[in-house]
Length: 306
Image 1 (cartoon, rainbow, N blue to C red):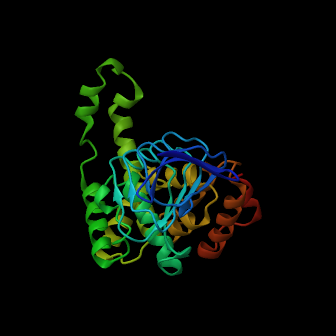
Image 2: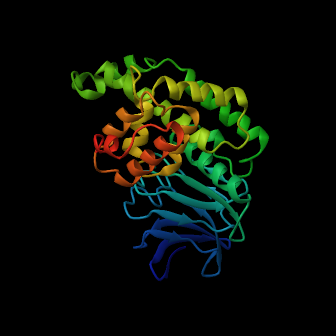
Image 3: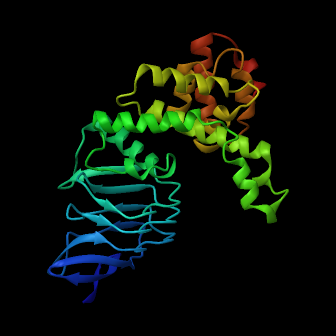
């Protein structure tokens, strides 16, 4: 039997069978979708096929502990979705459940409204789970019941290294063959294709170094080396470009570049000049860091990079 449920900005259509409810279509109007444990007399146990498909409003979703299944394309193309809260037990996921959710940064594992993991572990695992969906494209890693375990982290890093070590040209021929009608377009340009591959690898390396729970020293060294090979002043500058263009005033990313030596005395001024006037707050921070770390440049020298 199909019914309707509504409370404040949360509303959805659901199907009830044998005391269990499957959410069929979300009809809420807010940026937060909070799904209850019960709809009427039925326990909400599943998110149905295409239930949130292409929703351009929701930014955060809170699932109840009762959820056991998320069907095909349930949240696909939710372009503003940044955070998911879901129970930390096994869930059956359909294909493409989070397809093209490019802004998804955290999958927070909870039980009874509280994080399953403590503090920084929760943040790290939440970021790695989200990345498994849209950066590693590995549905096997979307496993709330295993996430955070040593075995799960080992599998995550194995997949990461496979992506990092794949030649940048891999897949280019398929792009050409599948896009013959777009010959000459940016997507079919080899230089552009290679740059996008390098940017994808930089995003992964940055994410893993910032969320380094269980990170093996050898893996850390390999990721760091890749970022250093693509920083400001190198033949390809994707490390610097990604941080400046995509992470703006997020201080943690600049601190990482400083800590690994991707920003150093010989490229610091060039990086600062490249920031223009839009990132004034972070530029001022980096100027202070430059003085503290390298002890070079004074007030008048700093004027030349604004």
